[in-house]
Length: 258
View 1 (cartoon, rainbow, N blue to C red):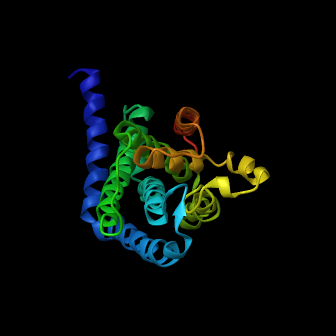
View 2 (view 1 turned 45 degrees about the vertical axis):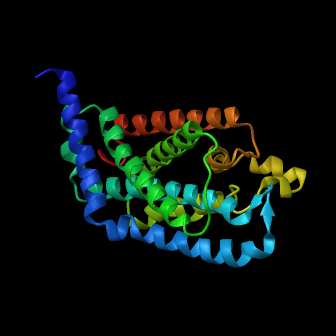
């Protein structure tokens, strides 16, 4: 059996395990995100949005829906990988993978595929639900799909890094609670940064989630607070950075060979 086929089998094994886990416990992996986002639609979109009116020339419901879809994709992609990887590590199953001849980049790819799969599933489900609240137009389908896929990849790798560092369940929750959630709410999900004073607009540019939300929103509505090419650049650079970080930690055996 050729090495390339062995690598593919290793990747397929990890990916299939991740896919099966997501589908098997769909009431935990898919349903909560759909329910919580639907509540956002009702409260922020229908009730508050009716008083706000328009945002950047579009109905506030249409504006906020796209931000909420991306917010759900970010949180589910991240949480899927960090919980799955940490669970494998805490159950001592990861040791079997680490001593096998499977390259570390295959391990990363396998777990990330699970995060992307869950992120896309949640994104599709929430998009279907959003059609009951507002009609969505598609401005650029290429930007739409690439933005959601790249975002899922980035936060899946970020979840893997968190899973590698975490030594207990409390540490698993630190980054989502104290880093990811604030960045998401301040990433242009509920508003356009053009409403902010100039100083805070510049501060917002340091938030990577701002680029993802705006890129995704541009794919639907054709509007963005930032240059979409720069947004692609920032997302790709972030993916490369997280990947190198995760690969280094796996090669070093951080938290696994101590």
